[in-house]
Length: 394
Image (cartoon, rainbow, N blue to C red; front, top):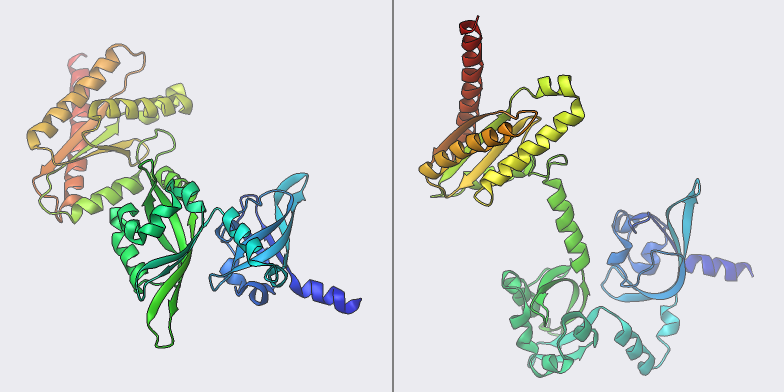
């Protein structure tokens, strides 16, 4: 009995994740079972290793990606972890049943492969390029009949995204870095591109010649869309929805290294924000900031980039515009806010300064400083004018 219990424990892998599947803890036998060190798995998503949805209480037999890109078949039980009556994660108890499954006949194994949503394939490159296996999931994932690829394995070059062509070429010629996932985009039958993450194993003959590849290609479109969404959010100001300083600096740096690009910088500073906050409250001050962003966007439209780079400071970045166009936009900003103030109980006044150069290379920081100084000059002139008017009216 003791031996049986010990054997079960040595074969049982325990993985704990948070509620979205990020691995927080893993038992030490993960190397013996899957080939991973504990640090390989920690802070990664469990979805990277299986195509099955196991983020819930369940009992399933799943394919799990090993360190060497092969798959283990794991009998998996998942239960929720609760703290103070709130679910904080999942605990997975996994038993490797691969050795038992391997004893099943070829028909059973083929049925398992057919049910996998991942695209599994083997492509021989010598003596001629030939697909020897391609899972039916290709039809579900990309909308093409499987026969098309068997007839013309090189059709994959027509489906890959142009920017990923060289990466695909390296993969098929034995020149890729197979130790890490290969990320490629393929065109769906409907015309859109889908992101895939491929784990590829190169095959060599006894003379160490590259003769084939075996791969598993997983649809990661949702993951990429989430990454892009998070990236987009990281570049946005939470209050106004405008781009933030981080994104503005990134764009400015690109222009800094770009040749023969005309550049205009318009710096806008909201006047008397502190006075508005003191008189009407910070909520009203926030509304004024949001309205300022709306008016700037309304004026600039798609002609340039509008960013909030400070508490009451906004910047408009224009590329490829002539100095006359920038000057006209500068004047239009003034009139936009004047028109708004005619119909508003609380006026929004901005101080504006701009700068321009016919070549952005190596000069963007200087242009920003010039526009910033011009903005402060505008602010100072308005204060002096207001001061002298008050004296004149005494």
